Every structure is written in C-alpha cells, then in structure tokens.
Image (cartoon, rainbow, N blue to C red):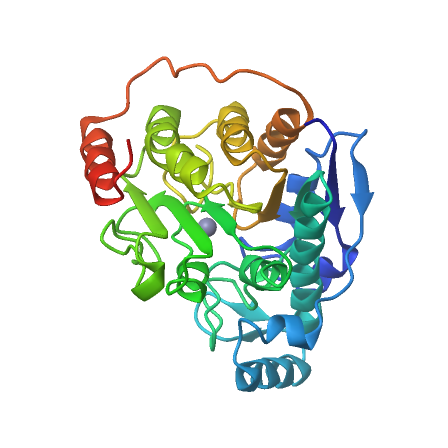
Amino acid sequence: MGRCCAIIDPICAEHDNPSHPECNARLVNACSGIPRDISLLAPEPALREDVERVHDPGYLVWLEQRCAATATLGWLDSDTYITRRSFNAALYAAGGAIAAVERSIKGEHCFALVRPPGHHAECDRALGFCLVNNVAVAAKKALEQVDTIAIVDWDVHHGNGTQNSFYGTDRVLYCSVHQEHFFPYSGTTDEVGRGNGKGYTINAPLQAGSTIADYQCVFSDIFVPAIERFSPDVMIVSAGQDILFDDPIGRMNILPQDFEPLTRMLVHAARVPLALVLEGGYSPSHGAAVRHIFAALSSEGKVNAPGIPPTERTQTMVSRLKSAHRLP
Ligand SMILES: [Zn+2]
C-alpha cells in the first residue's frame, strides 16, 4: 500500500480533434490531477502480437490503412474519428495499459492516463471513440503469466468490448456499473457470461442521476464480495470518470471526492495493487477526480457510509444481482 505511479504519453496527442469531447485537452485536464510526488513513466507501444490476442488481424490492417489514408480527419462511424497518426497513438495507449498491469504485478498501484480509450472496441470493429481495447489487450497479455484477473469498469457506459473479450472464460471476472438504457445499450443484469464464463460477468445498470450512495451499494454488496470470492492475481480498473456530475455526456451525480471511497473499496477487496486505465471522462472536474483517485492509492483510509441511502430501484437491482450471482 502506498507506492504508486502514473503512465502518461505525449503520443496520445497525435489522435486529436479539438471539437470532439474525446480530445487531447480532456487528457491534459485529467493529468492536471496527478500529484507532483507521483513518478511518471512513458509506455512502449503494444506489439502487434499483443493486440492480435484481442483483435482480428484483418481489422488491424484495415484500421492502420484507414489512418494512413486520412489527410487530417476521418470518421469510422458518426462518433469515432481518426487522424493520420491514430493507429500509432492507439498502439501506445494499449502499451500504456500493458505497462500499468506490469507495474501492478511488480507491487505498485499504477494509473495509465492514455487515450484513445478502449472499452467499446470489439474484436473486429471500432466503436464509441475506441479503436483498440486497451484493457482487454493488457489483460490477455497478463493471462500469459497469471491465472486470474478482475476488471471493474466504472465508466458511465457499459464496456461491451471488454465484456465480449472474456465472456466465455472463468479466468476473468468482469464487473461493470453503468447508466442504464444508454450507449452502447448492452450490459443488462442477465448478461452473466457463457459456458465456462457463466457467472464471471456482472452487470449493474443504474438509473441516470445515481449518486455515491447507489455506487457504494453496488460496490459493497456486489463487486467487493465477488472480487473477494474470486481472489484475483491482477485487478484492473476501467477508469472512466464520465460519471461526474458535470460531465457533458454522462448523466450521473458523482462528485470528484466520491472516487476516493470507490478506489479504496477496490484496494481493500483485491488485496493486490490496482492497475487503472483511463476510459471516458470529459468534464471540468476530471482533474479533481484523478487527484482523489491518487489520494486513495497513496494513503490508508477508511470508507465512510454515504450520508444518504441508495434509491429503492438500486436496492431492488442489487438484491436481484445478489441472488443471481449467489453472493452472501
Ligand atoms: Zn464512457
């Protein structure tokens, strides 16, 4: 406990569209919350073989060619842009996630503040601002040296690409809390995994407007006991701070300081250092949220009960999940 570092990477700036919410300025804002005494590391790019553990080789060739053929700005769908250098930036972002997981295996909490984000990217397609699934690439590589990995995704959107990468395996526990009836419209409570993976995907959709009381209820009653039971060798957080109250995309009501108890609960549950990887987060208070995440990683502290109760709707959803996943 206490040792932690950050991965930052200037090459992320090569993938930029200043008039899009997922622009480099939002990363600069997020990085403003890194405390001065945190050591900073730069990643190596992910290797082709690392990325191909998750993505179809044909998709990667197509993506690389689409980027190379882009003069200034191109679009893969109505949300997802590319620049001439986006493929390179995506390889470095995936490399940042790999480096964060490697640092965590060596005993240090590590937060990779890299972009483009990854959790919507599927095996054979870009989606929702995401080109390469950074967390899935890092997790698949780590599975070559460890047995089990837990991934908690607190981004306001469901991480469809990450879920699908591990839907059939019992070696990765994927836990997502996200805004219900919202892009990408997956992540219902009855998506629980398939075959050997049945029971190793947990989805907790929350109503728009949910507060820390709802999030802490999901964490304490579902994610923490599921992680403790699973006892993972590696713990990755898909850290999307678009649940902040002032986010222009998400509609949740989380304050910057609320990230402190959420982070602490995962530190206590996992009993291994956390590897956090940036997903979304587009609001003015993103830097403050990042500062609170590092505060939780760098010091011991207890988690107080929120001052207000979770909504009845959250309590109903949580008790349904508890029985579906046979949690105490
Ligand atoms: Zn998001």
